Figure (cartoon, rainbow, N blue to C red):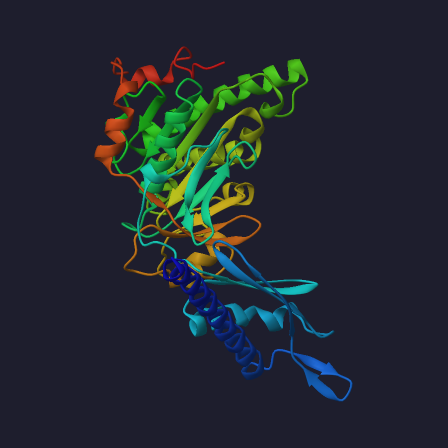
Length: 390
């Protein structure tokens, strides 16, 4: 009996010793990085480095808390995170708010995440992805507009399908979509018979008419809000939301080789998208604008300025990353891991976005498919052809 009880006791002691030894190695590595990078400041007659004052062991990470000498700037600490990640070969997060916090995570960001593994959450939220901290979600009632950038085949359109599927599954009776699929309708045309899909425009001309309907709806909704003294849809009894999705917004940018009529039509499209971004959020309209290569021409200024959620997958240049998220980084995302994305709000995080195939999306949403009468092009211009939700 004594031998049987002794084995788990010894095993526990060994595990504890290994954990302590691992933390000691991390502490020593951090200390060496401080010294090699000269992270510190003069105090009195000597150069003082950050001093460890606490170690907090958590389920997913170990947090090291350091007291820093006076005069140590945030700019001095910015390179530390990248060096520590390379040194420890683990995800690391460094923050500086009076104390210096260094968090060493136990888990790596997975290389693939399935849509089916995303947790269920209430509200107008969607899963953005998984990283070493866990799942990250976005609430469209708090931040109504979003831009998504990324080179083809790295996850941009899959992210749109992930968002669309999640919203329909969780709000089947309260959501409607207008999709401007500027890839000729190849990606979203197959979903036009879902009851939640008002329209799928597959050309600039169709996009012009679809956005015209949105503009009329906004004017009607503005009048309703003024009549009732409302300023934001979240403070009303209105439950429904309209999502306007633009897949490949560059196709709506006027080009110098176009005719004047074409330029005027596309300029009107961009103006309406800017109006949606500026005032549509309060009225219950959410805009998701996507482009493969963001530039000042392809990403309208009003859209970018009013989209506080910015998502980018891999981009070819630092310039494109600056346009997409006002920061570098997208050009350094791995080229062999589709779905790896940077999410930028008030902070910047790295996630692995959920993957959903067309087959899975179709199976999940098949229950919402209905027969619809095809509208003729002329019918798109009629006053009766409007968005039907209260």
